[in-house]
Image 1 (spheres, rainbow, N blue to C red):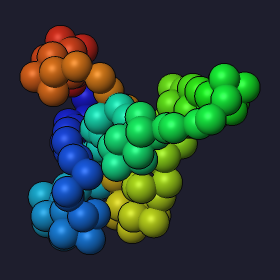
Image 2: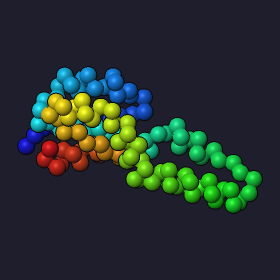
Image 3: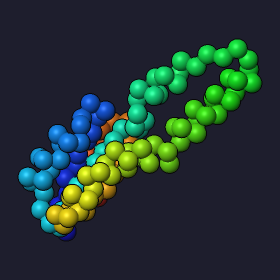
Length: 118
């Protein structure tokens, strides 16, 4: 079984700073999993919770847009977008790349990967 590297990314981490370290330790056949906390863009999340409107209709419309923006599918897409420019760099090295958005404790996520025998 190929080994894997779990890379937990916070909004502060810049991919261009993380990738050189991964390139240094990853070898062909390995798998790199980027773990990105849900929501993928916390600044937008904070702004969205400051919605003010003058009517209930506008409030309902704003609420439905917020719900759409924070759907699991949209958040996974944002996480994929963050990694996309670097995916080909790692794949050219023979490294499999995947992205996983998560909620809750990072320790629990890492533990769940460990229980999978990987």
